[in-house]
Length: 206
Picture 1 (cartoon, rainbow, N blue to C red):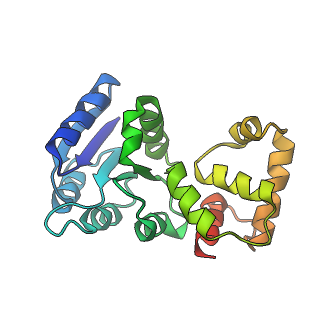
Picture 2: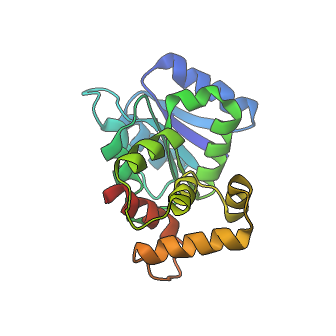
Picture 3: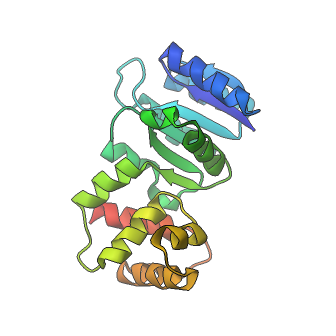
């Protein structure tokens, strides 16, 4: 796997490079701002771009803008805080290959590396703390507590098998919960396979 990293903190940037290298993941370029990220992605066509949200010059949303600019390259965004607007915009439109993690997750090496691999493979990974804050603030009244829990875990990128293990139910029961969620959110069957992301977005926007 080949990645590009954009992070203005030299210490964190170099730490990410070494962490990935230990797993055989090559960092083909490392930038300190959003413009550098866009240029590096265009030059190297990496399998994944990893970026901070707030970077020079204004330290507002440069990283997010850069992440959106390099799509459809898979992007994993790291943020110091829960940036609600940015998280929602990033995963909008049923996008694949996107992730949003709080920087504290990097300290959990296995969790971080798992997110890197899943996003690079086209999956969607959203930090559990982000999901908890956004979903807790915007509940859908029609969902049962178990359906809400299922949707929370779906937003974290768990497969049906993993959901079944976490909820201690059969995969058939998980499929029924998911079907009910889709029905209550008015998501019609389609071939794009993005209804999980669409369900999370509908939940966030309620």
